[in-house]
Image (cartoon, rainbow, N blue to C red; front, side, top):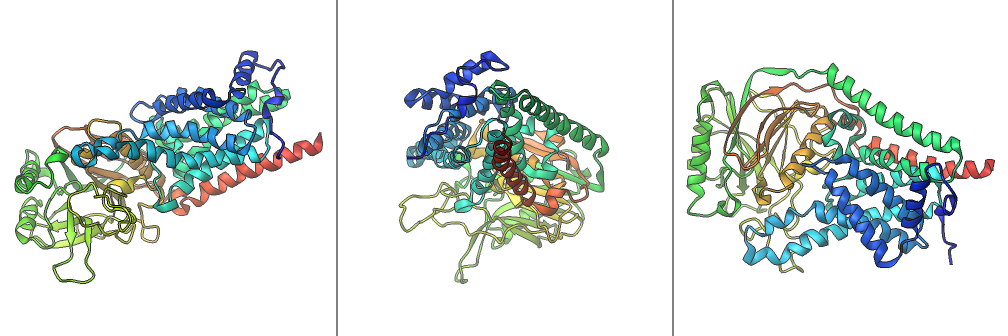
Length: 535
């Protein structure tokens, strides 16, 4: 049997530099059974208060320090895994609560899926954090070095979570910095995954102050906290000051937000009126000053590539010399092989010509397609029985009268490094979404924060058109220039911001945060051995 790793031996029963914290740490590390599981779930639940829209970051101090102290008392690999798993299960299950709203659009068919979509999905996602805590335990690091190891392992597992089994990188820990614009600027270098490691370091290094370690190690931990937070704030403030928002001359966008309830969309008796609704809003006062009109995801509930009458209605609101950028489904003509159905964005001019198309690549499992359809007798949430087809991935559209644009649709906003074509960098990002699925919940706020993170990572402005909100125009440093709130019906007019020069993250993508994570792991593991050798 592997000897138990008792990290707590460094302070248990011995006065620490901060005696009260030492007592709390000792009690948390001694928890077992249901008391340990319940405490971890409370800590994970507390941590969710740091997510948008609340952004209460101070709660992460007790939530993450508590996690480390409980992990200090783990006596086996299994215990170490479940310490991370219980904490993360609460973090994800509560953070994803709004997904249940989508099942209530048609409750008779889908309400039974709510526990699987929230508690079940949270349980699956929590496995990744459980792996991070068990890796930290296996490393047998102590003191400051266990914090470095945990930060590196957590970062790596957040990255794995973004692609494993197509990925679901919603609410990575680094997303909490949406509430602090200065610190958010670090995403331009290390992305949201790098911010995950940064978050672990900032909010768990204080546990070293409660350890019975040398004064030098405590001073090092305190210095690291000050250096990390102070350096991030200075970097961010200077970056924000150095790059005032600049606008592209001659372009004025109109974002249409019709706020159509999800239960009404795709009803045969309402589709025509919904299309006319968008036409009417597009021509609202101020239309004569607009150069381009943007409609949200599936705003045109017709197959515009096959329906010239519906396409003519869309084209009718294209400003003179401008375009309509509209979300609509697209389908291959009947009898065409291979058959395809796509969730698309189409650029349509005043003559009804389609000048550009983008097809959504990252589809929502069980929303737009059913994984293992042959084995799972489950209907998808969206209308119709046919699964959507996936597009080819990030691409840049060259459309007349507009700078090169990098479009993405809805769910694709949460995939770091996968919203812009690195070989043909766009000048701005455009996302179309329909967040009516999630009602008046935290979901749309978290979705907006994900889009803002992509803008800062890439150094590109973001235009976000949402059926029910939140629609916004955001500059390449994440600053909101214009906003139309959740469930507000109307239009949002504004100029298009200019991009920045390509950011380090925009150039190298997730290579930088993964290198950072590996560095932390090496410092944690080998630093421990170096210290042991000296002693």
